[in-house]
Amino acid sequence: MPHQTQEMERCIENCQECHGVCLQNVAHCLEKGGPHAEPSHIRLLLDCAEICETSANFMIRGSELHTETCRACSEVCQRCADDCRRLGSDPEMQQCAEACQRCAESCAQMAGAFAHA
Image 1 (tube, one colour):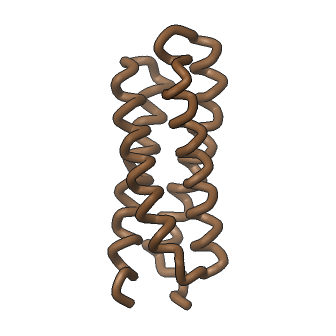
Image 2 (cartoon, helix red, strand yellow):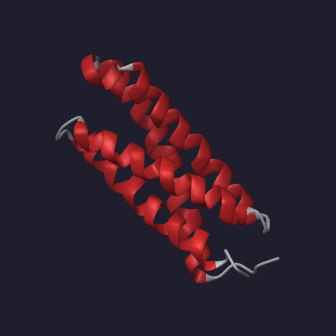
């Protein structure tokens, strides 16, 4: 079982932050309406929140399978970041895109760091 490194601790924090930001943005997007409330965007925000929470939990408990959840998390977070950027320049979408991008990069590193361990 891999021990928690500083890199893993940062990744857990990034996942937890992204989880919260995506959940908060679901309400924001539904209130804003229009393209923000498109079912595909809301679903992506919820998917991102869910995989971030799952990935953080796998790392916290030291699961040997965390590289698999991190790999999936990186992909979902990147898609969510891109989708939030697509929706314009309001501060909430910018914050969401930034949190998702940080998480995507952090999880990609984690997925590679222990892939052959």
